[in-house]
Amino acid sequence: MHRSLAILALSSLAAASAIQYPFVESSQPETISNKPLVSSNAIQDDISSDKLLKRAKHLFKLAELAIDEYNHPTRVIGSQGHVATLDYIYATLAGLGDYYDISNQTFPAVMGNVFEYRLVLGDSSPNSTAAMSLTPPTKDKEPVFGPLVLVANEGCDSSDYPANVTGSVAFIRRGTCPFGIKSENAGRAGAIAAVVYNNGKGGLSGTLGQPSKDHVATFGISDTDAKPYIEKLQAGEVIESSAYIDAIVESIGTTNIVAQTKGGDPDNCVMLGGHSDSVTEGPGINDDGTGSLTLLEIATQLVKYSVNNCVRFAWWAGEEEGLLGSDYYVSQLSDEENMKIRLFMDYDMLASPNYAYQVYNASNAVNPVGSQELRDLYTEYYTVHGQNYTYIAFDGRSDYDGFIRNGIPGGGIATGAEGIKTRKEAEMFGGTEGEWFDHCYHQLCDTVDNLNMEAWELNAKLVAHSVATYAVSFKGFPERTAVKHNVLSEKSLYHGSKLIM
Ligand code: DTR
Ligand code: ZN
Ligand code: ZN
Image (cartoon, rainbow, N blue to C red):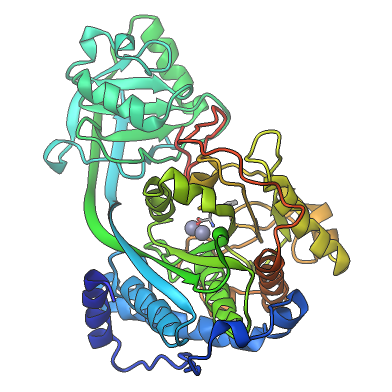
């Protein structure tokens, strides 16, 4: 066991000594070759809602280990809840005999917390004000004061920042480049804070992404709130302002866990992932306990079979901080290793209480070739099983993003987060029109009671089907042709659950 995980595991074992890990099924170390080849029907029959629910209940107990530190259950990176989650995943895999090569990948993650903030422009505080995620605090975590200064264009170039930005609050229009670049440019121009105003309808809540020493305390506000200030500034008025953010941005070590079958062609891997972490606010049993536990259950059942192609499972850490684990993993792949991954399947939120069966609308026209075939595997399964499905944007909001940006075909399914179920979707899937798909998304109530078990069981069987299909054969699936390196589609507004631009 990698030293750092051993330390993590020991600390969690100490904390979790009251909790046994009941699902470590010991298996005889048989040779893989004398096992029957996996089939979709066989492994789907191994999946049941009872077994999934049992794991979910256990995961919630692990989240409760964080209560002393966070005053509520959570599995956010760095918490005892997440350390215990990692230990549970690792111990379960290690208990499956000699079927997998298990590796853990510790990497430097960043996590941010905004405790308090306030923005006053002139004599009013815009109602839509939101501090950006991963924003640094204002100087000495105290209010700062200065005039509001309009930045030219969209603040993506240093030349957009007039000299009088120094000592001022930079007022920057959204668009063209990520919020992090705007904040960095403002900081370099000597601004004491930055306010990004929306170029579309509504408020603006996003993330600065990877921290920079030049980032400055940064807020987002809506287009309507910004309008009167823009007009006054353009008329030459001076708008004295104050900004205050109390926040921390800290680096912590955390760990991806990757398990690959020893059997199967190692040059043609089917890879799938879920994220092992939750947000700070809650235990994340749907987001993404359902994805990571589905992988753990399938990895457990798969040991009964042999495979023709290797199967690689990944439990990503730091997804909620901005896809940190999957980004790090892909960044460490050599081109040769990259080419061995035939496709990556992302499983993030599989049991939303007000679910829709959602399929990422990948296409070979804009995504690595093979993404569309994977999409069609999902839609065919739902159709064959008499279920409706909807397409959702393949827009970078979960751990597939690093893979498709680097030339690896990707896709996945979900059951919905803070999106609102339409009347048509209520007719297609049941549930409640006009409500979030998951009313506990990123909240304390994302517990075991926040799961639709019927949806989870069907989706877990679909995940098993996707694994078995490609573990048996890639016949008819496009060959890998090229590695790409962090291709940024100009339309990528998301990288993780938060807007980056
Ligand atoms: N599971 C969410 C990220 C996510 C993935 N797909 C969507 C679609 C709509 C909203 C959010 C998401 C999370 O980890 O927060
Ligand atoms: Zn998620
Ligand atoms: Zn989330």
